[in-house]
Image 1 (tube, rainbow, N blue to C red):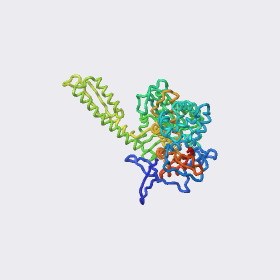
Image 2 (cartoon, rainbow, N blue to C red):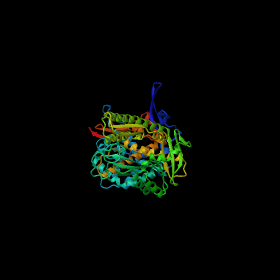
Image 3 (cartoon, one colour):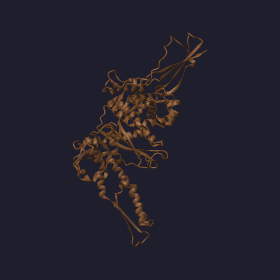
Image 4 (spheres, rainbow, N blue to C red):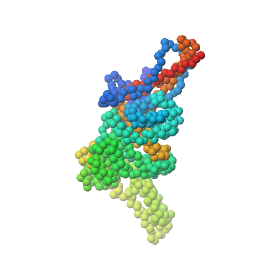
Length: 598
């Protein structure tokens, strides 16, 4: 669910409010419907902030002070001052709302306290835990390179008011060194976040979703032994890459990740990730949910040997072993358009198989097959015509063309039975004869299996509906990759050193943790689970200096300039979001008095 801003005019006034919108599937495609219209909270309603901390003890309950700016001692106000209206001006406009929210999330997760303990201050001018915060908040608010942070983002943001670090001290050398200092604490950070996120959002860790993605480099990466050519999920096989294995809960909350060489097969990562999770969080009877790319007999035997459970996808070809079950009618509907059934394993009593059939998926696969069949038939007719006209005389070249056709239309490669023969006594120019016909056996199997897929599990005492629903939650891991790539811009990687690349991925991981924390906070607040809208609205909240030229009556020989660092007033739509989240936006950050002798 996501937020949509709505505006309407009534009685000559323009009103703004929010609608909580949900996307859903229909027979005619995806549709959207309004779940609720949101205004400011009524007196009896609890804010999202209160709901977020309602299960925490007093010591760990989040406080609004996490979002308050540092306290500045201000001089007492004088009785009155004279203001030169011609000298009133507004200066130093800064981005405030998004960095204020991001820093609040950073403090809410206790990362400021944790890193200040594990990264103690030395002789450095800016503490390393502060540099780590700058890197993560920059990736969260406006993801780009470290050079962009130095040249543009930090100077334009209000972080200087919160962190006390002037823009001239934020440069690439310090940011790169901060990456190097942050990386050794990866495991400590993951353990801390697991406990903190579990307390905040009442998470359960018995169901773990695991998936692998890749992210590519720009450059030759000669000093990075992990950068390899491999299967690219980004459609960039021309670039070197690394693979990232991510473990999340069923709510999409990240628990940890591992980085692998770019040419590592998905199935080769499972043992390393399972061992890493057990080393960090202990060995327990967890259920691992993985896609079919992870499946191998060795991996499944490894998980069973560690008293673990699994729900995994299987290769499409394995459906042939269960052909007779597909035609039977004992299916159970788990949701509209999706049916499942439980089938015993043919050779392993410790396992069960779950057959699933989706109407939408079946229609999609049928359309793809038809498109491939039609295009393949056109190319086969061209092949046949070339043979009949005598332009194609070599039988080896004819088979090469046939191979390319089957490769191009691989989804329908078995749809036709094709024969290529030599003509012994040719009457005309033709030297070859090409004939083809529809393969009815392939056609019958496709009609039966379209929209069907097979799951495999060693949870023998769980009903098929629950098994299917748990497997479908794997989409949370897929969404995690989509967010880190599209919203947090983890790709491409410009760093060339292996350790610097690992640190870059760690910063992206921390930014994703902030993203999911905001998502869960919004969920508790009835604002859906898509933070992008909230971030965009908060980014329009600015801070700046209102400069007042004054002269006091007590001393006519001196003038005083009062510089008030203020925050812009939120508009009606932003006030609704602040109310729902339970936040109070500060109005003034500090006051600076500048006295000039006349």
